[in-house]
Structure formats: structure tokens, C-alpha cells
Image (cartoon, rainbow, N blue to C red; front, side):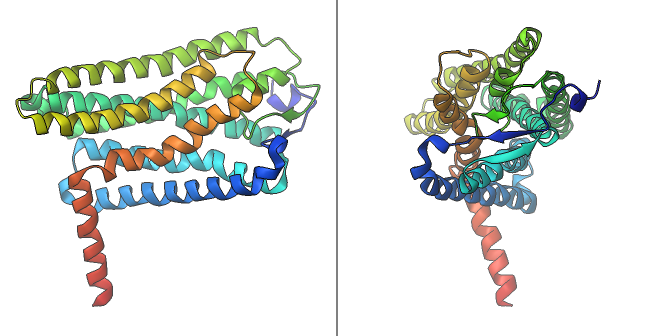
Length: 314
């Protein structure tokens, strides 16, 4: 059955942040600033990694794909959020809502896989440096990246398909700033038990397993770092790993609290705040944490800028 025959609602209204209308202009400026920084930062990573031969390594290949992903991931959510803040209530067609839901799940799942692969790459580099080039060759890196994208594409289909088959015959107001899974299921006037169980199992399979793999990789990294004789080397590595783990924890923690540990008593406003972290904040933090704190990357940025300036001066 086509999803538009399964519902009497042809469009939804995203309520966004209507309850704090006096703050909407301020929120618009903040989110627009974050969005611009996110786009610029991730484009910078893609350009620098592509142009500097020294950065043609597995670690930076993962980072380049993560940056490309973050551009589209945040673009799936933030422009609609900004339009909602300007209009104080935005209508979205049923089909457009399902498309947004699909791409949100697709990009979110792919990011989980890429973050897990990046942690595995760092584990091999730190704990098995002598065999790193063999275990993480260019071919293996490409396969892991392609596997992350393909698995993410497949992950997005099931939730979007199951939500599109629900009946929506009551209110069409989504108390959120985008078409997310929990508020859509709350609006349905048909049984959502099977859908909820399926999404719960899928969330555990993607979020919890990827987070566990990431966490285990960093545990081995930390245990290996503790054996470094140089105190300055330990501090530097701990600083880098700590930053990575902090961003990863924010991303996985907020996602798990929303989809693996849902709480019916949580207010819609709290859900919106939690969603801001994994849709707006982490896409901004990733380029900062994974690149701008990296000495080799900063040197590559300076060389690219110098090269461009020389070209224009000539």
C-alpha cells in the first residue's frame, strides 16, 4: 500500500519553538551562525585533505567522508529549523516529512558507523603501529567507508517505511522542529507497538553496538598510552583522545537517550533540547575536534592558504 493512501493527513505542521516566541530571533541568529560555521569548517576539511598529499591517509579519508556527511546531515535539519523560526510554525507535506525522516536516519546511522571505524583506525595506529599499514591499507579503508555508507542507506529505509504505513487521522501538529520518530508515532491513531519495537531493536543494533565498539577501542588506546614513557606524550595523546571521546559521548549519549531509552514523561521541550545536540552541536564540534586540534592538519591548512594567496597575487 502506498503511504499516502494510509493516511488522511496530507501535511504536518512543525510547531518548533513557538512556546518561546520571544526568543525566536535570537535562536535564529545562533542556529544560523552554527550552521554557517559547520558548513565552512567541513568544506575546509574536504578541500585541505583532498589537496595535501601528506593527508592522503586512512585517518583523513575517514575524516573527509565524515565532513561530507556532516554537511548533508545538518542541512537535512537546520534550514527547515531556520525557516520555522522565521515563520513561527511551518507546514510540511506528508511525503516531504517522510523524505526528511529517511535522510535523517540514513545520515545519523552512517555517522555512527564512520565514528566506529575512525575509533578502530586509531586503535590500530596506537596499539598495533607495526602492522597498521597492513591492517588498515587503502583497500581496507575504502571497504570500511563504503560499508558504512551502504549500511546507512539500508538502515534509513525501515523506519521511514514503517512510519509511512501508520494511520494519521487526528492532529497534524508535530511538537518538534523536524520530522522525528517519537513525535510522529505519538500522532498516529493506529497501533505503533510493532513499529516501536522494530525501531528500538534497530536503535540498539546501530547506536549501542557502534558506541560499544568505539568505547572499547578507546579503552585499548588509553591502556596503550599509559605505557608511553614520556609524560608529555601521554598528556598529548590523552588530550586528543579525551576530546574525541567527549564529542562521541555527546552524540551517542543524546541519541541513545532519545531512541533507546525513551521516556514518555520527558517533555517535548526537553526532547527538542536533546535533539539540538546531535543535529546542530556535534556537526559543528566534529571538524574542530578531529582536525583543528591536529598539528599536521593545521600545517596543511597554512600551506593551502599560502598556495592560494600566491596564485591570486600572481
